[in-house]
Image 1 (tube, one colour):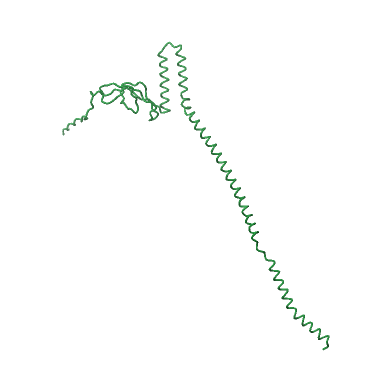
Image 2 (spheres, rainbow, N blue to C red):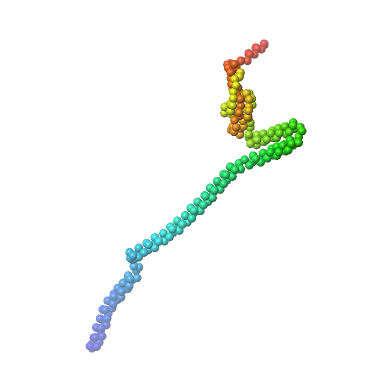
Length: 226
């Protein structure tokens, strides 16, 4: 073998030996490049910045929610104030016009009294005027009794009841218990409630009259004959 051929053979062998090393170097470079492509971990400053941004967003949401709630409270307070004013007005109207229906019903009686007064100016028969007034009175009493449950009470001879009668004087008499001698002013009840006590003169027991201690028993029936 010539020297030139020998040199060429050695060179080829060296190139063959160096090739695995170059391939390993290339593989190592690729691995390093792969590591560089992975995401970097955030720094503490970046984490704090993210936290601040999140808290700022949360504060904004809570602020808006607080404003919405405040608006709702103000609206409800305004609605309640309007409701309170309306209730006060309705209560006052009820108080002011509570007797409206009663007064409307009394207008007919007032008209009749006006007609009677006008007729009395030229009337020659007093009895006809008295009868007219009596008729109006009866009509008015019936209206109050039937529609408004108003009733009068107090008649001479009734038992005296301090819950219903106001005694303005008394006399002694042959009675077993106090009774009304005279009624000066009738009493009135609205349903079962006394709205005006009757003013009366009372006859008090003088001790001469006594109640029977025992009731008389009825006589026995005679036996029937067989």
